[in-house]
Length: 267
View 1: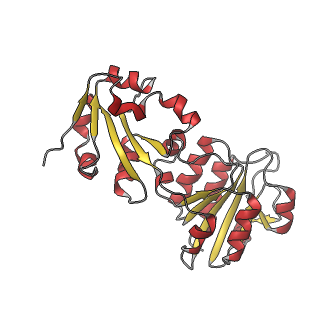
View 2: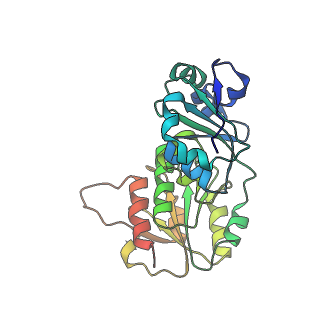
View 3: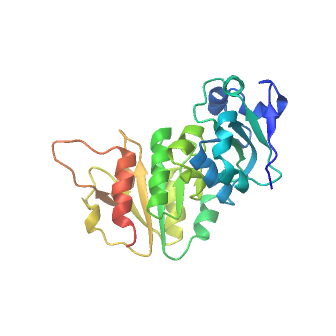
């Protein structure tokens, strides 16, 4: 079956309104939608049932290499095609990848609901105050690579469905279950109630992460670069560090998450 493509000639065509002025609308929100960008990300979007798509927008010179992707797009999801000039005018800047989709967020579940449906043996990443979208995307990528079952975020953490965060995550933000809201104490309480051992990662942690003994349910708690985790949390939780040279301060939080998750993976 040949996929029917809808050609867009006018950048003001109302059918592509959701793609208009992408950067500005990234900042103010999309009323329950998100933008997925790039072939790899769209492959994740259309191979997982977690999120539904509203439409696809392709640059005309990218269509020839999209046969496999287009076979995954449900028949009721329109696929729009535009020239580079028209697509750039719609988006408000040059879209080099030429591959976009609008996804629908759906209703986000609570931390308690997400944790309650995790398996008996589970690894969770908990984030407090991660406000950089590059770091957020990289942490999700690491979480997917090392088998984390979910990512929990407090309300001060940035949106993992921001376009750049999804792109940096290589689609992992669309794959790994997550929830965002409340504060760090709320996350810790929800995790402890469900039997999770919480390990707080900090440059000043009390022991090396490779020496920690873990149970069947483990949560790795990460804080923002600079301020890190609040001292009160570090005092009440098991704190660990990644050993590095004494004459250097610390690792980037995304890099630290990769090292820590590799250490915890499969225990």
